Amino acid sequence: MIYPLLLLFGFSSAIAQRSLDPLTVTIARDFAMAPETVALLSTAVAVPFALAQPILGPLGDHFGKERVIKAALWLLAASVFIGAFVPVFAGLVLSRIVTGAASGGIIPISQAILGDLYTGHKRMVCIARVTMAAFIGQLAGASFAGLTVETLGWRGVMIAGGIVVVLAALLANFKIPKPAPRARKPFSLGTVLSNYRELFRMPRAWACYLTGFTQSGIVFGLLPFIAYLLERQNNGGPREAGLIITGYCVGSLIFALGASRILRLMKRPHMLISGAIITAGGMVFFAMGFHWLVQIGIFAVVGFGFFLQHNAIQGEVSDLSEDLRASAYSFHAFAFCVGAATAPVVYGLSIPAIGARATLLAAATVFCITGIVSGTLFSWFHRRGI
Image (tube, rainbow, N blue to C red; front, side, top):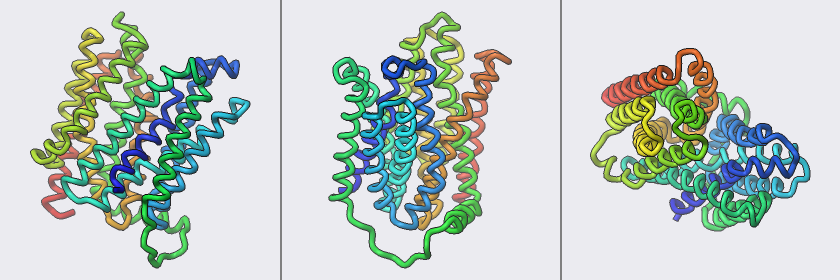
């Protein structure tokens, strides 16, 4: 019964995070602010999500993952409802900061719970589908917001999203059993540092986190530049960029739906290497500047390849430590988010300096080499039992 609930939690938290993305102009008009300033609401969610990870994981390992998810859902619901009624923009920013931090206690902790419940092939399929539920939530939240904002207003959109999160929180309270009591020392900063010291003694942890940081940055750092690159090529603009990014999401969903069969055919190191080659190949074709309709298909390939290798990394993270599984997942989410947040700066410096095509080809090369090296390392770790 817990597994379908975790899908719902991932879906509802994604709705809460992304539903305001298409409403920048509407909110800017309501508060008489520049749209560029209102666009920072996305950053106000993403940065706290990342920064909360190093503490949320140890909290889950110490007090119980189920308790953290329940608390995070209620905090998320409160932040969304408060944001719907704030009279000033600063209040909305603060509510979105809390939304980001609270969301950080849901998907990574859900993945850690799945790591506790399942093993091997089943674990990786379930983790892939929780990720899929979050992507569906992002698409549903953005689509619902765009379709209903004229009727409900942006505040009504937030209230609707808050209702979804409240329903998820109620189900969590009534359907998720309390964890069995266990003896533990008082929670402290020393506990957190001790957890991470233990994790970082493992060579596999370094490989997981550095790979997640690099590869998330290369792919997610590119997304904000797609419209800019299309305009430079006289090949479209924001609308076409949105459709191309939708192609990426479709590719990730195709992987999640086919994960069970794929995982029967491929081991994790092979998934990592194959996914890196597929993703890098897609980026090379994107650099060639094909018509934007073709680029939608290319980005579906990129999305499929990215999640093929990403799922392998998540499986490795899950196996790092049974006792510190929440910490392991949360730090992976931290590394992933930091990579996605810092890479746009690199793209922004590189594209004017060496050109868009050279930048994309270099990024594809780094992505491919990282995947091949990581896959080879994990294969060696497995043989040595490290």
